[in-house]
Image 1 (cartoon, rainbow, N blue to C red):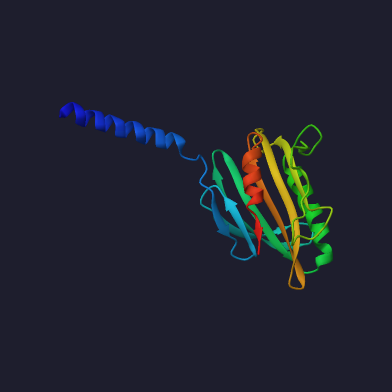
Image 2: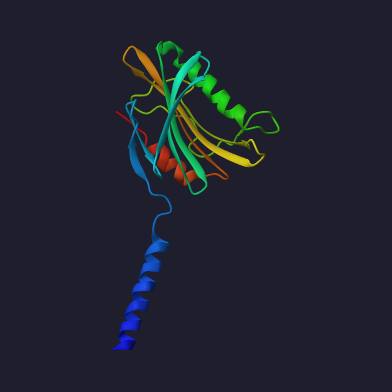
Length: 188
């Protein structure tokens, strides 16, 4: 009887280890942005923040929702633009600011032209040349290698527009995670 009990305990312990090994590394969940009509799929518990920043149109109240998982940062940022005609200008400035943060030999992050990069204009998004998905690489503030998967787009909202940026910052290309993250963005 003791041998049978010991075998059962070993079997249960082995099953528990197998289940732990098979559990997903990222725990994807849908997060509704509080102050924007967008749902995002994030691989971890989301944190939110808001602060005024200068993104080419003067000070704007930038809202961010994001988290860190498996050594990568996932974030969705947005702000409102009173004049929809200025959405393209805001996207251009935002893209330049993000790429300038990560230095490389050319002074800004290098674009990697990865699979999926290019125009990103799903239904409901303004059809602007600046609505893009870009994979880029550069050096972070402490000299570490940083790869980014970035997405910028805008959509009409009332008499204005809302400008969005979704990004993953990691130490290497995360193509599968980028596909999951970007495909999980749902405009409402």
